[in-house]
Length: 163
Image 1 (cartoon, rainbow, N blue to C red):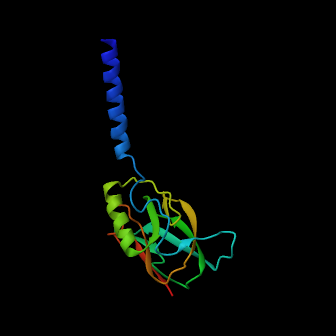
Image 2: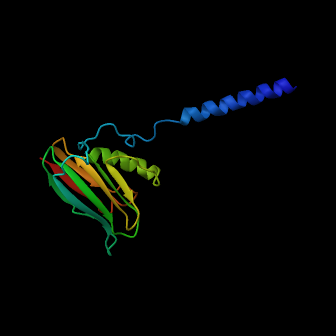
Image 3: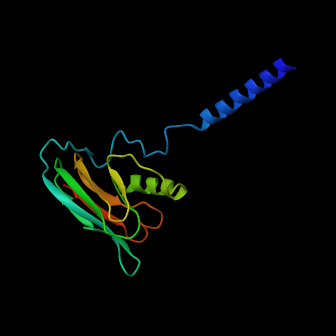
Protein backbone atom coordinates (compact mmCIF):
# COMPACT_ATOMS: atom_id res chain seq x y z
CA UNK A 1 0.00 0.00 0.00
CA UNK A 2 2.84 2.42 0.84
CA UNK A 3 4.54 1.66 -2.49
CA UNK A 4 1.29 2.28 -4.40
CA UNK A 5 0.79 5.62 -2.56
CA UNK A 6 4.36 6.72 -3.29
CA UNK A 7 3.99 5.71 -6.94
CA UNK A 8 0.72 7.65 -7.22
CA UNK A 9 2.29 10.68 -5.48
CA UNK A 10 5.29 10.53 -7.82
CA UNK A 11 3.05 10.29 -10.87
CA UNK A 12 0.95 13.26 -9.72
CA UNK A 13 4.09 15.32 -9.02
CA UNK A 14 5.48 14.51 -12.48
CA UNK A 15 2.13 15.43 -14.08
CA UNK A 16 2.01 18.74 -12.20
CA UNK A 17 5.60 19.51 -13.17
CA UNK A 18 5.03 18.69 -16.84
CA UNK A 19 1.86 20.82 -16.86
CA UNK A 20 3.79 23.73 -15.41
CA UNK A 21 6.58 23.32 -17.91
CA UNK A 22 4.10 23.20 -20.77
CA UNK A 23 2.93 26.69 -19.88
CA UNK A 24 6.35 28.14 -19.14
CA UNK A 25 7.80 30.03 -22.05
CA UNK A 26 9.84 33.01 -23.06
CA UNK A 27 7.03 35.49 -22.34
CA UNK A 28 4.87 37.59 -24.58
CA UNK A 29 6.14 38.24 -28.08
CA UNK A 30 7.71 41.65 -28.27
CA UNK A 31 8.95 41.66 -24.67
CA UNK A 32 12.26 39.96 -25.16
CA UNK A 33 13.66 41.94 -28.03
CA UNK A 34 16.77 40.93 -29.91
CA UNK A 35 16.23 43.21 -32.91
CA UNK A 36 14.29 46.43 -33.18
CA UNK A 37 12.40 48.14 -35.96
CA UNK A 38 13.64 51.62 -35.08
CA UNK A 39 17.35 50.90 -34.65
CA UNK A 40 19.28 49.62 -31.67
CA UNK A 41 20.12 50.48 -28.07
CA UNK A 42 22.70 53.23 -27.96
CA UNK A 43 26.04 53.26 -26.22
CA UNK A 44 26.14 55.95 -23.51
CA UNK A 45 29.96 55.98 -23.79
CA UNK A 46 29.72 57.22 -27.39
CA UNK A 47 28.79 60.79 -28.36
CA UNK A 48 25.13 61.78 -28.04
CA UNK A 49 23.99 63.83 -31.04
CA UNK A 50 21.26 65.46 -28.97
CA UNK A 51 18.99 65.10 -25.98
CA UNK A 52 15.22 65.08 -26.43
CA UNK A 53 13.11 65.71 -23.35
CA UNK A 54 9.80 63.83 -23.53
CA UNK A 55 7.02 64.73 -21.12
CA UNK A 56 4.14 62.34 -20.41
CA UNK A 57 0.97 63.87 -19.00
CA UNK A 58 -2.79 64.14 -18.91
CA UNK A 59 -4.82 67.25 -19.73
CA UNK A 60 -7.85 68.63 -17.91
CA UNK A 61 -10.09 67.49 -20.79
CA UNK A 62 -9.03 63.82 -20.22
CA UNK A 63 -6.50 63.58 -23.03
CA UNK A 64 -3.16 61.88 -22.51
CA UNK A 65 -0.17 63.00 -24.49
CA UNK A 66 3.53 63.21 -25.10
CA UNK A 67 5.38 66.47 -25.63
CA UNK A 68 6.82 66.64 -28.21
CA UNK A 69 4.43 64.61 -30.34
CA UNK A 70 6.76 64.57 -33.35
CA UNK A 71 10.54 64.41 -33.72
CA UNK A 72 12.81 64.22 -36.76
CA UNK A 73 16.09 62.38 -36.51
CA UNK A 74 18.94 61.73 -38.94
CA UNK A 75 19.70 58.12 -39.73
CA UNK A 76 22.76 57.04 -37.71
CA UNK A 77 22.12 59.63 -35.00
CA UNK A 78 22.42 58.57 -31.37
CA UNK A 79 19.83 60.30 -29.20
CA UNK A 80 19.23 60.44 -25.46
CA UNK A 81 15.54 60.55 -24.53
CA UNK A 82 14.98 62.07 -21.09
CA UNK A 83 11.57 60.84 -19.98
CA UNK A 84 9.46 62.66 -17.40
CA UNK A 85 6.01 61.67 -16.18
CA UNK A 86 4.36 64.87 -14.98
CA UNK A 87 0.94 63.21 -14.90
CA UNK A 88 -1.09 61.68 -12.10
CA UNK A 89 -1.05 58.06 -13.38
CA UNK A 90 1.55 55.62 -14.68
CA UNK A 91 2.61 56.05 -18.31
CA UNK A 92 5.02 54.21 -20.56
CA UNK A 93 7.28 55.05 -23.48
CA UNK A 94 7.65 52.29 -26.09
CA UNK A 95 9.74 53.16 -29.15
CA UNK A 96 9.00 50.87 -32.09
CA UNK A 97 7.21 50.60 -35.41
CA UNK A 98 3.49 51.36 -35.47
CA UNK A 99 2.87 47.68 -36.32
CA UNK A 100 4.98 46.32 -33.43
CA UNK A 101 3.38 48.73 -30.97
CA UNK A 102 -0.07 47.60 -32.19
CA UNK A 103 0.87 43.98 -31.35
CA UNK A 104 2.29 45.06 -27.99
CA UNK A 105 -0.89 47.02 -27.29
CA UNK A 106 -3.00 43.84 -27.68
CA UNK A 107 -0.71 42.02 -25.24
CA UNK A 108 -1.02 44.92 -22.77
CA UNK A 109 -4.82 44.76 -22.98
CA UNK A 110 -4.63 41.13 -21.86
CA UNK A 111 -2.07 41.87 -19.12
CA UNK A 112 -2.17 45.60 -18.17
CA UNK A 113 0.30 45.22 -15.28
CA UNK A 114 2.92 43.60 -17.51
CA UNK A 115 6.48 44.38 -16.47
CA UNK A 116 8.92 45.43 -19.20
CA UNK A 117 12.63 44.92 -19.40
CA UNK A 118 13.29 46.29 -22.86
CA UNK A 119 15.93 48.81 -23.88
CA UNK A 120 13.36 50.60 -26.09
CA UNK A 121 10.78 51.21 -23.36
CA UNK A 122 10.17 52.41 -19.83
CA UNK A 123 7.15 52.54 -17.54
CA UNK A 124 7.10 55.52 -15.19
CA UNK A 125 5.07 56.23 -12.08
CA UNK A 126 3.84 59.80 -11.53
CA UNK A 127 6.79 62.17 -11.02
CA UNK A 128 9.10 59.45 -12.40
CA UNK A 129 12.09 60.09 -14.64
CA UNK A 130 14.25 57.85 -16.80
CA UNK A 131 16.51 57.91 -19.84
CA UNK A 132 16.92 55.85 -22.99
CA UNK A 133 19.91 56.14 -25.30
CA UNK A 134 18.97 55.01 -28.80
CA UNK A 135 20.82 54.82 -32.12
CA UNK A 136 18.57 55.20 -35.14
CA UNK A 137 20.12 52.91 -37.75
CA UNK A 138 17.09 52.62 -40.03
CA UNK A 139 15.22 55.25 -42.00
CA UNK A 140 11.44 55.33 -41.76
CA UNK A 141 8.51 56.45 -39.67
CA UNK A 142 8.25 55.04 -36.16
CA UNK A 143 6.46 56.00 -32.98
CA UNK A 144 6.77 56.14 -29.26
CA UNK A 145 3.56 55.31 -27.50
CA UNK A 146 1.98 54.54 -24.16
CA UNK A 147 0.38 51.12 -24.46
CA UNK A 148 -1.27 50.98 -21.05
CA UNK A 149 -4.92 50.20 -21.85
CA UNK A 150 -6.84 53.34 -22.83
CA UNK A 151 -3.82 55.64 -23.03
CA UNK A 152 -3.04 55.21 -26.74
CA UNK A 153 -6.71 55.85 -27.57
CA UNK A 154 -6.57 59.00 -25.43
CA UNK A 155 -3.81 60.40 -27.63
CA UNK A 156 -0.56 59.05 -26.14
CA UNK A 157 1.48 58.49 -29.28
CA UNK A 158 4.13 60.46 -31.08
CA UNK A 159 5.71 60.22 -34.52
CA UNK A 160 9.44 59.68 -35.05
CA UNK A 161 10.66 60.36 -38.58
CA UNK A 162 14.16 59.08 -39.36
CA UNK A 163 15.66 60.45 -42.60
